[in-house]
Length: 486
Image 1 (cartoon, helix red, strand yellow):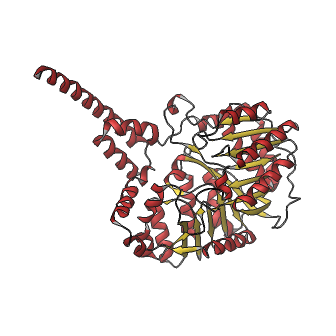
Image 2: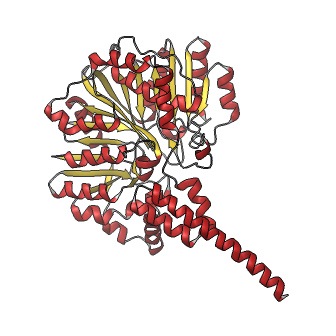
Image 3: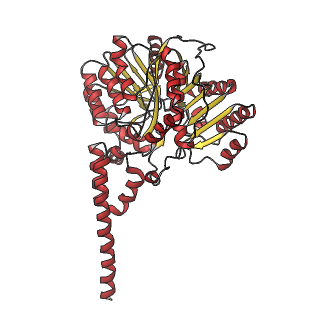
């Protein structure tokens, strides 16, 4: 009996030693690849303390490098060498020459994402789901040559069925339709939904983030972009996915979100973002419009000459585009910076920048949900209240349903609507795109939208936190601990 026990212990010991060796090797990978010290510490301690659990979790969820995308992006230009030259020659007359003020607020973003601002655009705010999807279906119905449709989440519910019918109808009319979705965000999408679209002539692709040998076990990356483009001329981009909840038809109630409608050369620039994602997923280059003149006709309201850039970033860039975008906006604000984000789990550098902005007299307001859809980031947000309140930063909880919009306003100079949240996932793990606008009229529209939303907010304070039960406060502390690896 003692011999059998000793044998079992030996086998168990070998397993534990082997697990620790693999954990140490994994820690080396963490040190070489993790961008933040907090994330490295978090993963390192978990790997060494709980190797049997933490090692497989890390290799599935923990890596920060998405391999192969940059090479495929270069391959697009290599296979179609004239594409970039054609796009540049088409957009060159529309490139904006930034004045000194504009350059101060947004000039660095051109270098950061290697894209240019264009002039001659018209951007309109689309508030909430009904207004947004009414416009999206108008754009789909009006497409003449092709449609590019990309969403993080597509559900086969009433809204999803309406989209399926609209895309199938256009394909039947001879319009080329390309649909791209994230397979993790749309994990519940049925095979029937996809097959019926393909049978109707729609080219449907999952983004396929696990593509490639080094990515095959990694499911932590997401393509979080949401956009619809027609004929290289008109587009939408923002926070809305395809699901009944985005129309307020769900248990969570009203869904507060914002998308923008884009008409002008910025739509063609956004088309390039779609093409890069499409080529990663499908490995071929469709024939899109890169040469036809851009027109702003047919849009009601708004200026015809807005300076706009489609800023894309993700886990394939050498610089953290999302982090630097927010830091640039916060640091340059003179009078105000207003931010709306459903998930507020910022890095220490963002926290410090917000505190400094408030201390130098900037009106800093961060609007977050009062009603959660995901408990971990919701709980983690409470842990930042003391740091924000101590510096005079106003944290406002939106009470009329769930807040999902991703909007930023800096003074009356720069505004952004897009897909990026103020959390680790958007900064480092997701493929995101924000529409950056430098136009006083549009900034005023965003200002009015913020004021309407602020009227439906209550201020979040430390007194609120102190009155919560101990088990809730414990959950907040635990959520803050895992924030670097969310």
